[in-house]
Picture 1 (cartoon, helix red, strand yellow):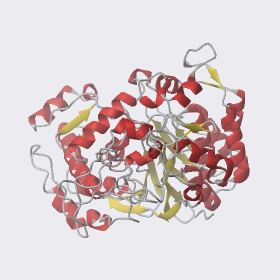
Picture 2 (picture 1 turned 45 degrees about the horizontal axis):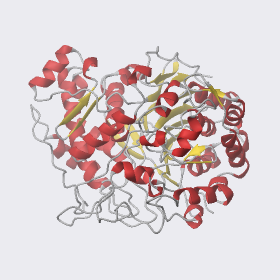
Picture 3 (picture 1 turned 180 degrees about the vertical axis):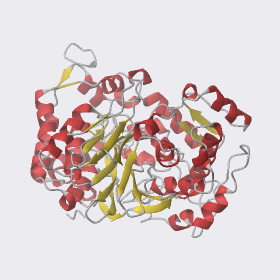
Picture 4 (picture 1 turned 90 degrees about the vertical axis):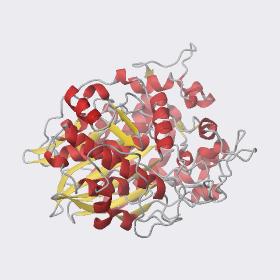
Length: 573
């Protein structure tokens, strides 16, 4: 084996996110992380136990990628509602020695036998989203571990086998159940009621686990021991692979996943997709990630005066209108470029984004139509319904190398099915459930055998024009990831905010006629100014669901930020 919206979609995905996310009351404010020593490195991730695992690797002389392996292994144990060994990921990596950015693609793949009618029922109609998620067909070949193995083989200093000790120790010896994990286990999300999840989260007395309970997972410990010894083969071949295949082949809508599909999986490494913005360069992974969409939005904002309107009504208005244009194009054209034509160069062409920017008028108009960039094929309106699970980490090491990585099992607890102590992903429901529109035009993100589904994950790294590291950010949040990341980049670059202050900015997700926001976090003056421009903010709908993490370089050293809406922290060794 080798290891080298349309408005309706956005609204429904946001609604699903709101239903699935643990209650926002669990979030708590936190102070900005202190600056680190210039050579010490830093870890910002979604759970303190995972952060500590990464810091131990850095203290022992490991690299940012070495630490990312350890962080992911622990996240899969203590934040299984968001990511894990059975999921996928995108990583953007900055090599300080060469000043080059590499994008790693660990997105899951569909079985070779999958067709564009993969999620159709016997009545000839697409399955409902809930039915599709819980079915065996929702699970793709997991890619996160294989992707990390590839990146670590190229940029690691530690032995692979030594990076799983903390995850093994916590799984065997027990760990205190985090509040978000307990809330997710007790939620009304259908996966939380799946038999495997119920069995895992039910205590001997019949009650569900609560925050602070000590929980053990010996099956997970055994799995990470095998991965430590065998690498990705431990998941993609042999006994665990057989268990995954067997698990997804049961139920009313079974998968046709095979051991050959598992063994054939290959992660990808490509040059990062980088474009100038103001005096900086912003890099992200290419399609099928959300990277091109974020870069297009920045290209549009380049032609506005958003940098002159720091956190005021005009600044947020420009942000919202660029977001609408971004989502319109992304929903129409983004998919796996190995299977369909994705007009990335056309979407990012300076003349194209300049023309798109001209559509931003003095007041909000009707929902923008997708543009027609150079190289764009005829595509149908998209019907992808993307939930808002996922996790993000940013890690810097003492050599100046940086990882920005977004990782996911898709919805809360993925498909709700478990193997080897971990949850399987439901990533294939990131495909469009329908193959075509009424006019017969094909959906770019339709299912196909071996294809990777479109993603909103867009881990970003910012450089100066000499390709020196400036900042790295990213977030979970389904389709809202694009807005969360764009907000933070605007805060850092245009509004000159420290990374923590940029993360703390209120969230606003604009698509079509839909303006979801953390309404009360905007000042009355900003709300009134936006309303005067025809923009009515709406509460809820997942706007509070970001989990941003970031690190920036300052003259005093590294400075980190963690989203107060979740449980993450940013710490130096």
